[in-house]
Amino acid sequence: MKYEIGKTNRLGNRTTNQDRFAVLERPEAVLLILADGMGGHKGGELAANTFVLKMTEVFNDTALPIKDPHKFFTYAFEYAHLSVIETGKQQEPPLIPRSTGVACLVQNGTAWWAHAGDSRLYLIRENKLFSRTHDHSIVEELIKKGKLTEKERLNHPKSNQVTRCVGGVKKSIKPDFSPATTLHPGDTLLLSTDGLWGSLSEDEMIKHFSNHSKVDVALDRMSEHAENISYPNSDNITAVALHLISNDNTVPVTKNAVQNSKNNDTKQADLVLDEIQQALQKIEKDLKI
Image 1: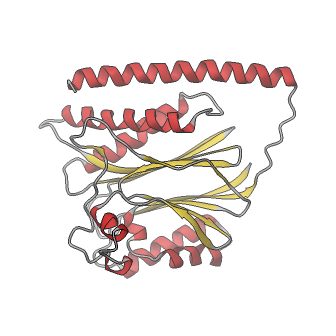
Image 2: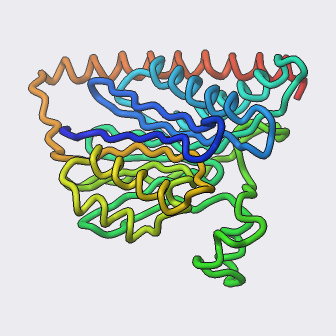
């Protein structure tokens, strides 16, 4: 699998940057992670940072290829969620930090993603929007019910209120999951905070990718444009993207090698997930939930 990565992070007109992201590349898989700390609550930066760190920890400790991405994301989000709560309790004075979060796993030319809140993932194919996540927000629900239009989204008084997040006061988290999605050469996966998608339309974002052959250049121009047109109220602007060049996954191995690798990966993956489950139970006990 050949691909190129782009990433951008801008402060905007804010005094602090509460966005966090990571691009984790291993021989058989890539994990893109993005979080937007919720500024309406104290500790947003702490929540976003903890989310990215814990997602990274789970990914680095999981055998590849990941045989059950849905199970992987379920554990990773829950582990990160409880860790954010615990980290908040350890502050002086204690905090209840919150963050949105989105992550995308790519392996063997296939993508899976999960999210909570209004940080988004877009899949762009042949210069068109093929798929995107749906925000966990009051405004998104109003749009689904036909009570609000997309144009009215940003001017709504509750445009920044999300209905799901990482951290906060709920005992568990229920992110939304995508099905396995086979990628085509030329596809672009874009993860974005609302500082970007709230300033640019989907057509404008896609146009930047079509106008620039390098994904990092496209993201740089895109974020600069978003910052300029939202001045002097620009939010933190963060995005990461993976552009698939080819899907060639041919690896010359023997039949026995493949079988042994699968058996070892299965045992290691199950062991890691057992360890994560034990960690979750310990955190839940400490939190008394």
